[in-house]
Image 1 (cartoon, rainbow, N blue to C red):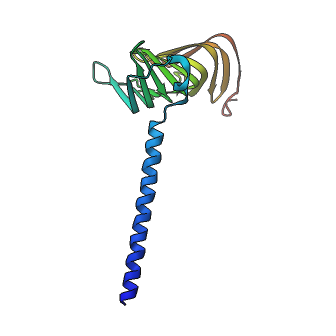
Image 2 (spheres, helix red, strand yellow; image 1 turned 90 degrees about the vertical axis):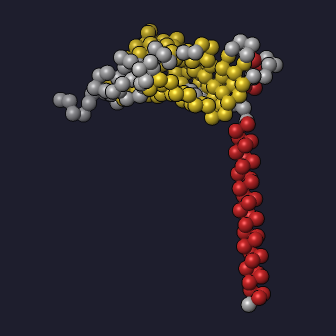
Image 3 (cartoon, rainbow, N blue to C red; image 1 turned 120 degrees about the horizontal axis):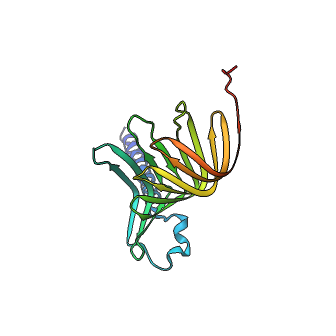
Amino acid sequence: MFIRRQFSRRRTYAAFLGLVLIALIFIINDTHFARTAPPFLSSSAQGEESPDTEIQRFSNTVFDQNGQLKYTLNSPHLFHYSHNDLTLLSAPKIKLYEKNKTPWHVTAKQGTITKTDEITLNGDVEIHGNTTQDKEPVTVKTNVLTLFTNEKRAESTAYVNIYSKQSQLSGTGLKADMISSTITLLSQVAGSYRQSDDQP
């Protein structure tokens, strides 16, 4: 009995050490991931200057003067540079809210803030929301977009694709108003329309 009990204690101790080791590995990996700067920060855009502010898992919620939720902004990494008051965001996710309406979702690979209410988005930019017509879901895809968070509108001079349930449009240049839920292509517009199955 004494031998069995001692063997059991050794197995329990070994199992405990194994769990501690696994936990340490996860902590080290998570710390390494959190401290890894996004790829775009390795470019020469900022010269040799290091950011004066770094925030991991950045989150910001903004309300209007009436206390209504206006928009939220989340990013895994935020870096601010003091010499030109420039803020860089990795993988920003923005939600724009309007009372009694479905929020608009805006995502991109990276974002640049030069003014408080203006974000320039680059790389796989997507907008998801509902149009005024029948509240139909719509998706906008482009590579460059300027988002004005206070005015809840967006502009782009790049090539744009717009997808909805019944149509696909493309063109150059875009103006979007999230308050009125309207999207306008500016030039070289082309596309196709699919008639609904329930229409005669």
